[in-house]
Length: 341
Image (cartoon, rainbow, N blue to C red; front, side, top):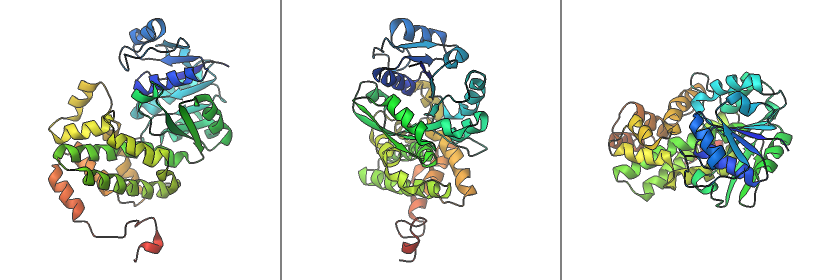
């Protein structure tokens, strides 16, 4: 078996590299900083992320992107979603046409409304070799071998099964799906809802409020997934409800933590500088809202998060406005039979 190239050496990239190594693969990681790549290769740890975990001897790293990608059996993309197109373009010269690629970035491209897999298809072509991976997978737990499940979605059954078999270990169980649209929208969306849940706790609201935000957030996810051509049932699975629950309730969640800090006076820039982590939900709420408007889908919670993060709107009036919305059936926009109940 050839090498598996993991593009990105953050927490999730490091955890996935360790999982791939545990599954019996030789892994080469790409890290932006040479000193990080050297530490991974020579000292078997990532000095910047998950530093306390010893990495497998089967993992090495380089800061040369082309070298990492060349002659790889498969590519695993774990880069910030806002840089998806840049990395697709940078990788294009080194990637052979049939090389399978699984995209683990979570977001919607600003301006185009494209999902990460769609961006790679636009740049590299051949969507049948592309897949998305997402689920309730906190890197801090996955890298330690704590049992978890994930979804690998691809239009191609062959590609989905290839990555399923590549990643599966005794503790990391992979399911497959043809609905990459639903899986990737859920991946981006849940970060926005997690910010809302964190903000609610930070403001002093309770578990009832958090549960309502999560379930009504799932309704927003379902409406947009359906409108974009995905399967609303995907929202009930690991990539939807599973990831949403983990992200909204866990102390590991950067988006939930950011929402709580935001409600207590923190800023986005200050939070990211302090934690060395990208708050994907902050970007996602800006890109999801225009996509929803394009498809004429209402997203009241997501819109409120955008106002909170980017416009400095206070939480209490935002919450009051949500409660003043017209009363509807629970599944409006999804169940036509119930809309007149």
